[in-house]
Image 1 (spheres, rainbow, N blue to C red):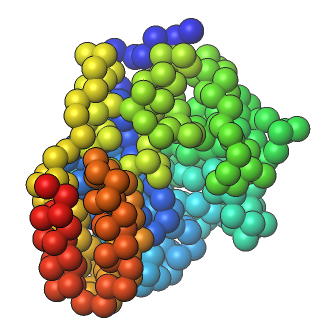
Image 2: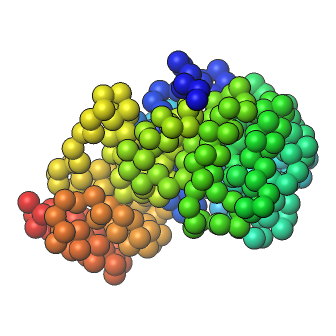
Length: 333
């Protein structure tokens, strides 16, 4: 088993910490990314955007690519299968929008993406992966290119090692691996043995993930697979503290306590205010209905968790959020 590299880098960028935030549609806009980094996320990426929509400067896509001045190391994540579109999109991300790196998504299992020959649809063609990564690298240079991938299309075609080697040959400087297949989609169980296989097969850093629910899960994956870092996805929604807890556990063997109600309130409120700035009131209220359930899971008392989850479900105005949040904290103490 390999040991983690002494210093983790994304090309010229030194990475602080060993636990990253995985991109997730609807959630990982800049408000969540900034909070994750404040609590120790090593790096982040934007939500996945289609290369052709970047080239067309589609309004919603450009909004998804917004960053906050406080973000440290955030890559722009692209998907696509057309070399010309990918090259132009990478140029825009790296040279117009100043992203420090470009992340190439060959992991998305959504059928319409796969049928377009993008996302996981590329996992059966390592040679094309190598060509497209090289195209991205040349267009984005000097910004480096990373790759997000899965194990393969299905359990009968586990191509992770071949695809990872192809990505490295094309010039990728880091691979993030979700060790499940495209057929599994967002369900099923990850096969962490594939992370170890990929780590042993390439000379660039490997970030592993899949079923990372707790800091202990992520630290265990790193110890057992030898991967250089681990990433959290859904477990980080409503829990930016997870990165700090994981890093402390990794370094000391002990996990720090969960936040007290006042810290929970302050962080949730800041997340909500940033969403208001990013999305406007109507969309923020709709988003907070979902996000409140995730934040509620971090409260210690069960009655407070239930109350917090229910209180926001009919939110119509942002002022109601402030009022209900104050009432919840008073009840949680």
